[in-house]
Image 1 (tube, each protein chain N blue to C red):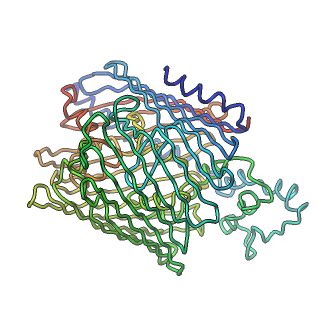
Image 2 (cartoon, helix red, strand yellow):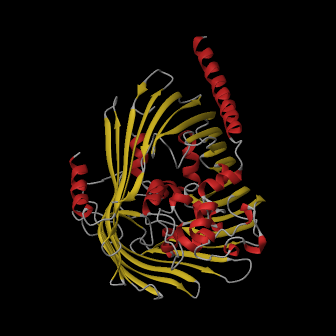
Image 3 (cartoon, each protein chain N blue to C red):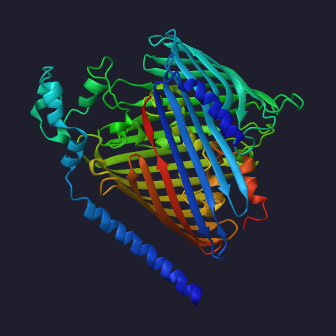
Length: 419
Length: 189
């Protein structure tokens, strides 16, 4: 609660300067009961709020999340962002400070820090610097020694149809620990580029290289192409190699399951059967396939496959979205067939329905074979202007683990306007 | 016997609910698509108050003598409300129209969820034309176990298969401590 008021104190002085304001609180409550009649009542409170039209194209955005689980008494508070931004100060400088979501050219981070860049709207280049404390919500949202991230980046903005970013980031995990290159600190260098050909099929090629000097590993080295031969048909193929710094003291999921680089090939198509001449109504089939090959334990290698096909229907003027999809997973962990159907519909004014049906059949390396079912339904109504009350339920069944019933209630408000 | 009956009844109820929802949806969609469009775009109001007094020609929107809504020039609204030097700047946020009438760039149709990393890094300005950072946070950071967005609820039963399929995918949002919080917790069944 104290943290909430700290953020609020930042908010109030800016309020006098702003001329637009938004606030979107949402309360989510659920009662769940498993097959042993154990009950739990989790409660979520989400708040997105912010100010706009501050001096120098300034904005201030805050996103909070609070979770209470009453029976087992687990609570968590997440601050996703509390960031003040200014754009085109003097026509050239962008500046942001506070907790913010950044994509510095490698992973994505939440960072408590500053990001500043300089570049004109008609300049081909933008140069930036950033620095701060990276935050990992699953480890340490506010406390703990979680090191430092600092670096520089250079963006190529549409020069000869190229959009590119060259970045160099220094990251340190823990200031109390010995400075061991590769284990506690490293320098990451990366380059991303997309290029769009000005020809009728509109091919776009893209690539990304990320190198970790501390681990001497190519974290990412990939390239791909996306082509649209006709208005209805599009396809994409890409391939790459990935690895991770295995000396790094914050282990990755990837380092748990592999012992070397892995190679991936991926392809996808989409075909629109019904196209009304615009984006408002379509019936589209999408299919993707990816193949992975990697070392489990050198020199042993294994392969994995993922294939999915999804049929989507989007009739926007009557606000109906429906999808039915199938996904096949195959790895040394086992095989799974997953079928899902979803429906979002707004048959009457101010009223919506979300329906989801999910069936999964799987067999694992541990010799567990089972089926899992999930049916969920949420319906909501706008009881007052911008205030929506929703309620629904979800039923899950799995022979090995549990049978659960969840009843859910949501109350959300969305205000956006001028001050 | 009681437990079997309970499971049977719950399964029946699930099917009944699904069928009922379908019936409600079909019953509700009696209004025409044109009516839905007209509700957002008041042609009479625009013609009387803006187009006629400002001598905006009909061809601005009705290109090639097309008068059916589906053949309108979709840049029509933007020509006046969201151009570089708009005749009438949009007074309402983009979501006034785009929340109701979702538009999606063509490149979002194929493999986009897996592919978006490179374009988002190399050209984040293009993403910001429609999305704010909150949109990224929704998938990459938000820890909401009541309303699941990223994974369906069945996923917890077979996530071990997917984690061995493409473990790099897990790292994009999770640290290993997320795995150990359940796998080393004796209270998790």
